[in-house]
Image 1 (cartoon, rainbow, N blue to C red):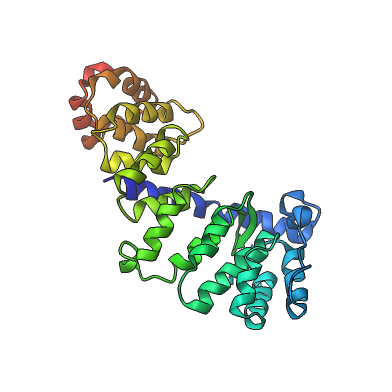
Image 2 (cartoon, rainbow, N blue to C red):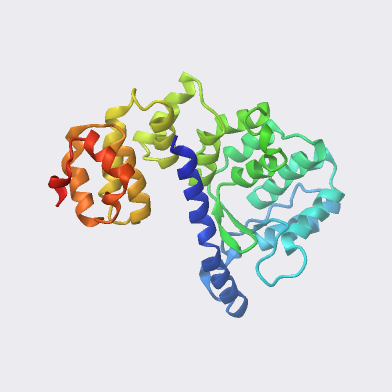
Length: 306
């Protein structure tokens, strides 16, 4: 199965950007005018119905307007400021007060409130996650050297995900429910969608949503899921999607090799022209024994690409 390989590729792609983010982070420290990292430009304050003893902390979280994990960027000491604010909020708020804050108009405050409930209860809160899932827009996120934006449901998901031992990821009923809900989340990141699809196989009802993600929205994790589990059923549209990826000049050669290999796995002589066009550009790869055997199954001989 090729899906786990691609998932690893998605993770590596994100981690490989870490050094770039570190460089940008250094620039922020020396030049606060860089707009890309101005987390306060879309700040929202919502303290009207917040209890007095929580109001300052909620305002402080809102003012920074970035979801920060416990890990600071390179060279930082101690926990980041908004993570410290979250701990203050967690220590001061009751369970009922945390639940009320899940409706706060500032999404960073709401996310911290849901995560606080998870920690307080020792299990994830379905209604809290649903609230985050239905929120529009994205929030600023900093996790160590990685700076970016994600849907508010994503940090909530990861907080629960990492409470589980690796051997529980496929069997945990709560994570199974979260994964199913993520299939309907608009603008889910490649990593979180790949994770949800890697964890398990889905029922026919949910499979139709995955089909929509793959062929209507052209989401790569959904495409790879169908290639792994429903290859024969969706052979036609899968091959069309792989051809589009192979012909996309913005995709790197290492990724294209994966897509060509997947296209070759259909053993379809009708793809001969597309494959030959690619091999003319990647002459080294075509000589690998595994690829040569696949080429023969697709009606391509050595004479065709010499």
